[in-house]
Image (cartoon, rainbow, N blue to C red):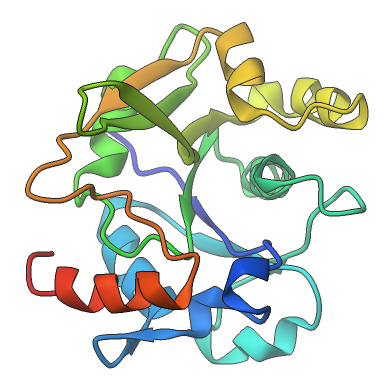
Length: 203
């Protein structure tokens, strides 16, 4: 299978962390963004970063920095849309999204998303909680660029809940085990950083 480009979603405002860029926080002596890049790079083609504000704070990464293409922080789908537009501009058929605050995602994420894609080419990652209920992780997906104008119109119309749009387009689901830990554990608070320090031993 071909390796699609990837967009790292870092456009959130990190309110529960007290502001700033979560991706620049350190876990196990390494910045989250560096952990995410190291994990996605072997799985994908070119990489870009979705972030708002001054792009020079990420200059050391030497990656394209793409702001949301819609105003007022409409959520992660705006970052996905920026990634889809960028992927289209470089001639790719799809883009994979990963979150900058989720450093332990699967090392076979892209392969499994591609295998799970629905007829539209769309797929989301998922993992079960402790009760066995499957939860989708909409910041981890495979997004065909052919749907970007549809997504743009949906966002302009007020759509914010990712799964409403992905269900409409028959997204496939790539389900990943959540044992010995949930690979989609994401860091939102200082307490989560402490938990992530422990997980570095397992990941």
